[in-house]
Amino acid sequence: MTQPPSASASGAAPLSLVQRFFGMLTSPKATYENVVSWPRWGGMLAVTTVITALTVFVFLSTEVGREIMMKQQVEAGAPAAQAEMAVKFGAYIAPIFMLIFIPLFALAASGILLGVFAVTGGSASFKQVLAVYTHSGVIATVVGVINAVINYFLATDTNVTSLKGIGNAFAEKGFLAGFFGALDLTFFLGLFVLAMGLAVLYRRRTAPIFFSLSAVYVVVALVIGAVKAAMAGGS
Image (cartoon, rainbow, N blue to C red; front, top):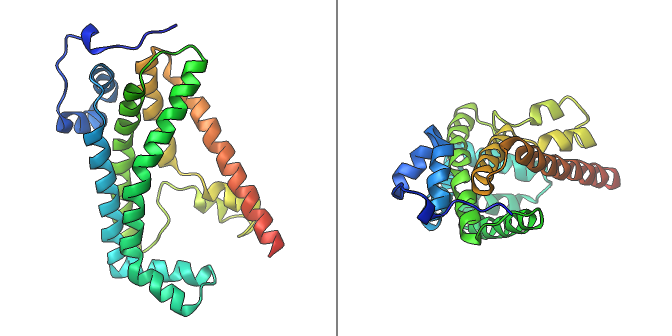
């Protein structure tokens, strides 16, 4: 059974929150080595969650954001009154939703990862896995802010890293459109960074972990594509 690094086994001092945030952008592997030895997760989870929620709030508070939200409501077939209500309160509801569910998802995902690796012979504490998971969110958070800025100037809700453009080449409500619409290169990048952290924690290779996580993501996208196609066929 592989033993994860511990604080007692490392001579390095714990990095500050700021050092860990920027370390994930410049030298993620070295930062992870410190994180698994000194597994602190609360500050990083709070920072990434607040930045994400604040980004969404600012974007939806702009005229561009409100127009995009109205367009989405109309395309979804919402009544005019409901659409106006969504535009009026969407800038507040979406961030609040994120502030609640991003931490809950982090806890759930970390528990699942802990269980999967325990079955395969890995040994680590929940706190270590949670610390790795929350720090992997730094990359996605920064890219999310960049995407929001680009979306504002392009007046679109589709991230430049999304594969939705490929899906648009197929039937609008077909399986392939739904499948590619569910894929985003940012998510793959996030999975790679997460895999790197899990590799450091469990002393394993990054590539097999990344391919396994990516396979799960692709399967989810396939399910989304199938569900959307089935719903379109039944409408």
